[in-house]
Length: 309
Image (tube, rainbow, N blue to C red; front, side):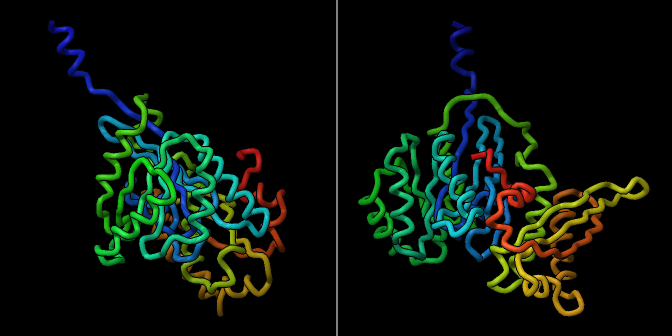
């Protein structure tokens, strides 16, 4: 009797891999940073900001959620674009649950239809997550939900605001109902599977995206050349190179008398210090590598591994 009572009292532990899929700029990275509680995915108002799978880990006392923030699904225009799309589409086969995130401000269009077509042969449960509800009048929400119900049989439809945090806890509770029982794959204090060097490079790229003009973003990569702690001081030296495709872009990133590069470094250093919990000395250089997005050897050098898809 006592043994049976104790068995019923045992708390089950759940763990699962959850892919966040959607068009560029629907708020996938904002959502990931919200649930993790710190910045691990860079955010920008420019589309196609996320280029690699960014894996974020949220651990509670009875569950572990491993979120995979994928590149926004779009029509590729170069080898880098092909890489990004293969990453996004392959995660559909690898996870326990898919979150299809859409922007409440935008109606159902060809981009959403293209993604739903990819779901037709997928057996994984799919949630529709309607993000940015803080940007619309509540009366519009019902018609948005109905328009998507006609397109696909989603397991759940949950409106949220990743920016404001509205309904995010409700979404997490629903996710927990669908992921399987399983072990804790990562230590409780681990929030991402990416090394610090990757996150540091992404933080630098984020600041460059925010500060440079429209012709720069998709031509820009960041490589960490060196990252080491000084023995005599509690300071971490970070040396990084910003890669662009044209000489004119190099001039824009450097700016007049180096002002733009200095501002990129200043803003990036603040986030890097928060990430590493230490003072940071950051040195940035800018280098031109023409048409790097179409050269597989250079994509590999910049961390885009073709053997990962």
